[in-house]
Image 1: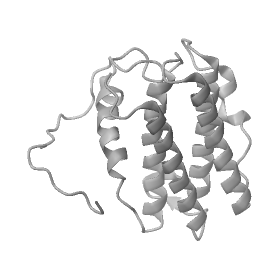
Image 2: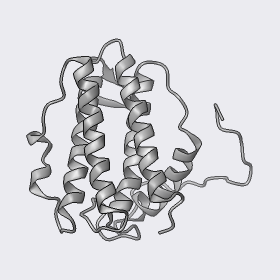
Image 3: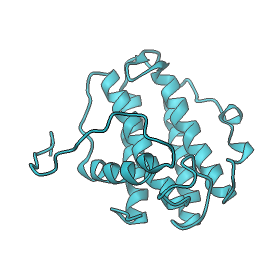
Image 4: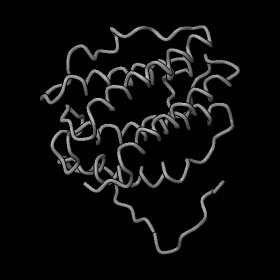
Length: 194
């Protein structure tokens, strides 16, 4: 697998997208509105999902390699996201920092369980970190879209996302269930906001 960006930059992008997510949640008028792109969730539930997910990833990396994710990563045992806005922001920041601390300690090459199993993407903390950029970026967009203020992805996140998608998400050993598509890369166009 070829990384587009080095591990310290991956961690910086996680911090950046996490800050953008927190800012979008903080600016929401109502956290109990449905998220159109995640119709089963409200903004508050999406915040809970993102905080729980960062705590889960920290536990997975800390546990090291394994055929199954460690049992202690069950989000049901995670603290509930606070209802108070300031406390929610602090809880989300702490969730991200817990994950980043474990990633820094582990480094990019430590083996760990991954949902993609054996594929061309390695089962390492570095590969898991790359995927976290996209997880957080997509949910940041979800919050922004819910508020009617969707922002384009930063170019470095978008470029990293294409490579991560091709080497991780689309590289599993199971058959691809979707109709193939072609991406035209011969005519570069400026991205909105770039």
